[in-house]
Image (tube, rainbow, N blue to C red):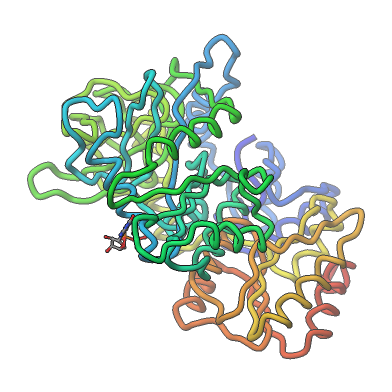
Length: 479
Ligand code: GDP
């Protein structure tokens, strides 16, 4: 089993629905993510006039090898990976900078002076946290949209001299859509006029009840500027992490995610990677996106040369033959021939298709997906012109849920449809609904590129009716 239905559609540059209906005509009921065996692949591709070559079969195997079920005895605890999100100017950068420069408690001599996109700090009692130093929910969701689930816990920072702001709500919804637990940091408590209780009340009004208020969300009052309360905040993050029982197998070829990459005049291509499983070693052959290479040298966030990096550890690697994108996965390969093979194949595919991204769900496709029986959740993002209609529309749409299909509203807000809405839709397979609002120019371009379905309405009834019809499977053109 090599290629999924949607991957095959992508490779042949045809609509995924056509592949599914071709399979149906051959008596095969397949879902979009289902992997096809060699024989089916050959037959289906043939229907579209393509010949299948199995050059990549052993290559895929060699990637799969490393992903093999991790047996209990190989799993060891790993540090949590944490992202900081919040409204602009509420203190994301200040918090990350403070932690980076002080290395908080058990400080190895001095702090970390360079920005590499991620860093690892040791707290009391040898407990560690890895921070993604690319703050903001846009970076977080852009990575998710590329298929990278990196973050274990989100710190949502809110300035106590301000209010819960639209981007605070966005950050909360982006973290929730990813299923990532949240710890609140109420910042700037040193400022005159700061009122942390007001923030907690505003959060309560959104149904995010902090612990002091009898809820389940941990929260701590801090001053990122003065470093007040930060140790305690991180203790709470560690508590949250304990409940997640984070484990990884360090005894296999490494795999993980590209956090940043660039071309450095002296050193060639430089990439910051985060190892998520296995152990990355100097000299390893790394495949990342369309690029590959032997690791010529590897450094930690303190610019010290290292030979190895284990799970949840970031590392700077030199030796790739290009700059992969943030959010691309990387894999250590057994040999250079395989790495080169896949890298070339990916490059060729990307060239042939332009830079086409994977296809996302559309309203028209829902009927067919339901018919195949692999569609249980309809995710929506709702933007509107006034709060009342956003709430009314959201309530009505959620009520359309049936026993078979749950309607989820991943994010709703007043305002035009933004790039961040499109990213969230791409990352959580959602359809975007605009009521009396339109997408911004950049959002429209991004939606075209990512193939996100945006539906615009000016009458609430029309929106409800169309979604209901789609859910009843009536919108599918030719099933
Ligand atoms: P970001 O946009 O969320 O990354 O916010 P920054 O970290 O850049 O902070 C925005 C502004 O708020 C800067 O001028 C910071 O110096 C200031 N600031 C951040 N944290 C605190 C704090 O705890 N107390 C005070 N008084 N100012 C802060």
